[in-house]
Amino acid sequence: MNKLYIEGDKKLNGHVLISGAKNAALPILFMTILAKEKIEINNVPQVTDIKIAIKLLKYLGAKIKSKNKILYIDTSSINVYYPPYHLTKKIRASIWMLSPLLIRFGKAKIFFPGGCDIGCRPIDLHLKGLIALGVKIVKKDNYIIAFAQKPLKGKNIYIEKISVGATITIMSAATLAEGLTIIENAAQEPEIIDVAKFLNTLGANITGAGSDKIYIVGISNLHGGYHKVIPDRIETGTFLIAAAISKGFIICSKTEPKYLTNVLTKLSESGANIKIGKDWIKLDMKEKRPRAVNISTSPYPGFPTDMQPQFTLLNSISQGKSIIIENIFENRFAYIHELIRMGAKIKIKKNHVVCKGVSQLSSNHLFSNDLRGSATLILAGCVAKGITVVNNIHHVKRGYESFIKKLNKLGANIKHI
Ligand code: UD1
Image 1 (cartoon, rainbow, N blue to C red):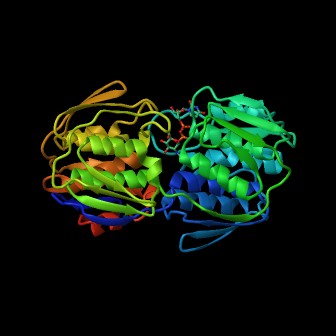
Image 2 (image 1 turned 90 degrees about the horizontal axis):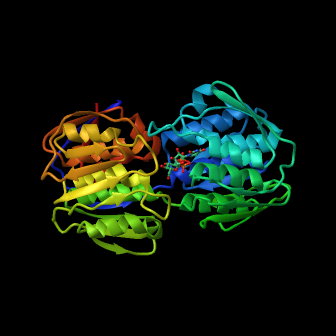
Image 3 (image 1 turned 180 degrees about the horizontal axis):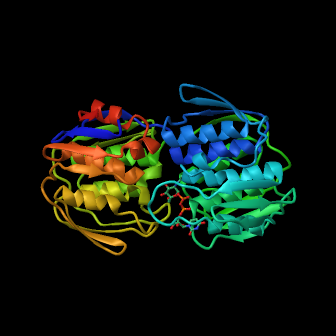
């Protein structure tokens, strides 16, 4: 079941419902450790990373029930401050347990996190931020132990490099610190706004999330509450690409167009006809082959690194030549070797690739290596000539809810083998 059999030459047309954002739901789930009352989280995507996060919380002692996309979480019974290695290693997001456990118990032991193999992905900025708030960190071979005098002391913290992960770690630690914390050079991703909104629902006092300066006035404790996770902008972008590469049309609903401004601009540049509404995006290629577009990734509101693989695929079958520059992660081109085996004309030079569009890719046996690369290879198989087999599809299940089912509903023919 870890392989897909994909019939190519398909046009992907129709309507798709967008799920909740994995990258917002994951930190929100771990932030529940900060409160000792009942919390309800809606629109949680049913993906493997979330299942692992739930297992981690249960291991720590939380009580969790789920119904449809709602999680009912009670962390009052948490009594363990050292999440296990075998689960922590599976997801990058597990680093977000560090702050809440530390604040709850005055100490925490965390193994270095896992996640997609797209670069070395250090956690130094998370740790520097915590140290600035008064935390003591002892690093061992594959884990860290952190100690804190409660409460932490609010501080001005300038994050040297824009980091989604570090911004969330520091913001959560400062929520229950004494006094004011100001995070400068903060990441501005919509997922950060959602985490701040969630914490504020529980009583936190956070302002400025979504800008490069976040103000957190520490409070003494958090209460329970209800929160609905924002739509997944990367899932939305991936489905828009599905229609664009197959000269089709698609309506993505239950999404948030304003999170995708850069992606939509590039899709329009490539020839797509785009209309947006309050919570939907319609893309129509009008049967035309896309035009190649140059991409350069950067932190939000720049072009998202999580959409780089999908756009490289678009460029690989577009009219013309393009340059794609990856500025966030140093090893995010593994999937390109597979596209080349399908006939794509792509050359990798350090952190950029030069792509000359071909009219169609051809099928092959492919191996996926990471989440977004895996989704990209599946889409490539849908439009290539012949039958494509994609191996290691556990990667795509980590972050896309019912991806295969949704694609088949749009006209793909994908089977598990
Ligand atoms: C999150 C997302 C990921 C997305 C990325 C950038 C989750 C679970 N993952 O990852 O999908 O691709 O944001 O939008 O939400 N860095 C350091 N030291 C640190 C932390 C980061 O040097 O302590 C570097 C990273 O190596 C990278 C850059 O900063 O080059 C950005 O990383 P960051 O924004 O933290 O990404 P993640 O939170 O890991």
